[in-house]
Image (cartoon, rainbow, N blue to C red):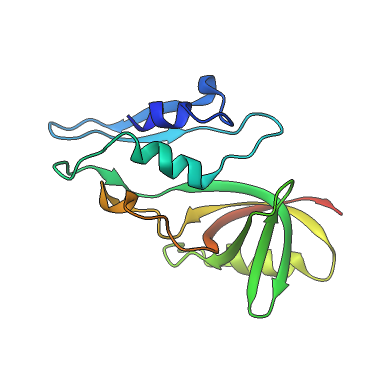
Length: 160
């Protein structure tokens, strides 16, 4: 169902949506749904949430969302005590935070050092904070804004 909901997004190429089964059990399968935006488009998390809600996932299931991993590209700046990524081509922004489940802990610190005083464009990967839980609880309301990415990886794309 999640695959079909994502494929309905105008900003997602339906051929890029892949459902990979990780384990098969007698009760429920575990898997990963992977997709990416069409070239020059952005995936709206609000619209994605709405599409998943439209699948009408009921409360009688034991299934849910374990995590939602994203990759966002844009300018990263330190503001006050926060590090903020503004997505290229939009007004969308994310607060970047250390992933408490990341055992390496060095990823976030390396990113903080890379920000430095140079203006750079970064590609940041991580889990969206608050996007996990059982259906329909996870779909009842959107997680609060500004959204947080719990950083698990990053790349310096270019200097601005």
